Image 1 (cartoon, protein in one colour):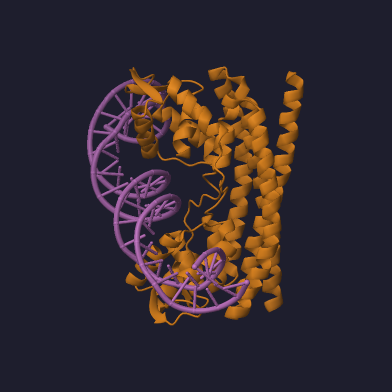
Image 2: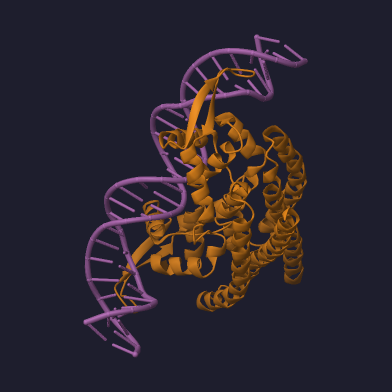
Length: 187
Length: 187
DNA sequence: GCTGACATGTAATTCGTTACATGATTAC
DNA sequence: GTAATCATGTAACGAATTACATGTCAGC
């Protein structure tokens, strides 16, 4: 559901192919939404069946022919309706595999989880760097689409990524110290 | 996959029924993993078929009979194996419905998203309060199970919730100011 | 007698991942 | 020639949600 509206929202800026959409997801949206190629194609098919988008075949820019999707009036109306009415229950950030692992980790002692948190810390720092490069990519898309009205929202979403990643870094550092302290006290 | 190991990790502390497990999830784990009753029952069934847990029927404490699950030797070994080998690719906090909505919100202007962020801010503040009450609930479970070795990990996971929620609060406040500023400048 | 917490499940559907399958064009 | 990127899809499977279905017991 959310994925199909996400695709619709991007096609609303300018016509895109499945492949284009996958690139946008991988370049930027991946920080808060992951989508596989095969799922994108499936959702595009069902969006077209529902009359929210229409496709036409275009010669490939470099490569085989492309199927490019544009939004319809109906699609625009459906998109607006979805955006205006948020679901009451919008769980954010649920299903975190790393945290559920940690929660039950006493079974394997302190050493291994400590290493695992250290690895996460490295990953968080890398993620923070990547978030900065995303900003540049989003500006490219603005140039392409000419839709400057997107910028404030994209900046806000990026800002969230930064705040949360910084919080994760602080938390990981704190937790590493805590586990090391416990380890020392045991000996 | 992660859910079934989560259940296994909890049953590892002391025998539990499906209903018990659901309560633990709703009381505490819900901050990083959401599970429906029907899914829990299904996973328990497949864990038992796989020989990781065994069930026996007990008279209900207050109510109908309960099916209570205990971990087996095989289950304990599988749990340890899973905990020791983390997946290379553990995406945390992906698929955030609120963020994907915001990302494509330019379609409906500034006012509505502004209200929606304000609502989130309220929710984040409430969540921070709830995280404090969770601490007390976890201490109850410690008392029940006598498994004090869980405490450091539970504290760490809770700490993560606090850090991230505080980051969300700061982000929401910042974003509200930003959108209000844009609105003023437009007029 | 009703409400709320206790308690367990099945069935249908939707959403997400993995594996499979195919082929064109460009740059080295 | 060969690797990388471009490009589109199907099939099978697994995970998660929603709807359905049933019933007990305690306290008011």
